[in-house]
Length: 392
Image (tube, rainbow, N blue to C red):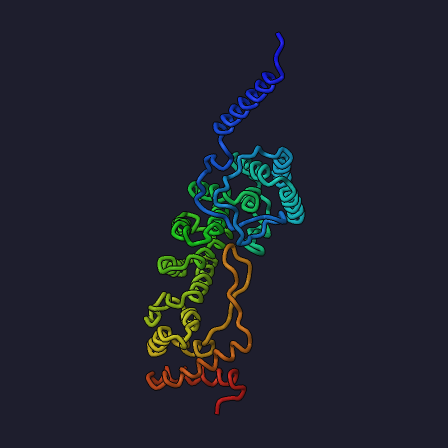
């Protein structure tokens, strides 16, 4: 049947209109990428690996980014398994460091999501091998050496998939797999505490660690975890560490004392009870060392200073205090979470000494003779550094 040119044109237009309608319906029914449900993330991570080096930064991945769902990378899975066997067969520390280096190099070269999936798959098996190396923290809270393959992988995971690292940290702390794994889990949790929203959980997890039987024979990782106390601060943690300084384990006592000292540097108000001669039941020089952190240019700390100097002391305590006050010594090193306290310049130290000298004269008149003698010793020493000439 013949079709006119006009009818043919109308037919083509109708067909085109129908195609547009069908396409529109299809697009409306297809879910858009932006409307897909996004898994809720409990916390943001401070780790963003751009150079593929697992160093800690304060950059964050998007809060809506889900944990990895990638398939494990077969090459990385094979690398982990071969590393497991190498560690099991090795007894040479130097060779262990080389095995560890090759593992880290291979992990950093793999695709992030698939490498993280391979690590998570292995960690779920519970398999492990000792490296015969110590638990030693390196720069930025990353590990220098680790005691086991599992701790090596836990150390690397946050730079690959920080959200999965956070979830795994909570799981391992719930299971209490080992003190060293718990320590790294605390670190990974702390790295996610960008805004303080995880501070309560971090404090609770640390206090839970101190309630475990691991306290009786603390590992190196257990002791390194005391850096969390410095990070979270607070009287509850402070009082708990004080109680730990009275035990028989010297390494535990030292770790607790160092953390107490660093907590005081960050929050001198923790010294509010310091005038009590029995405070903390420390050895005299330890108590004097902690009190020497006071800054008497601050009114509240000046009150604590006066009460302390006027109180009764063990023999030699006040003399030692006079030799080191104001205490400007700091401990330096790599830590799981915190960074070193800022070191003042020489000019800043001299200016601070001069300010302290300005306060000592007014305080001396209110003190008993022993306290006055201590003040005079402090003044003589500070005048040399602040003024440059010995006291008359």
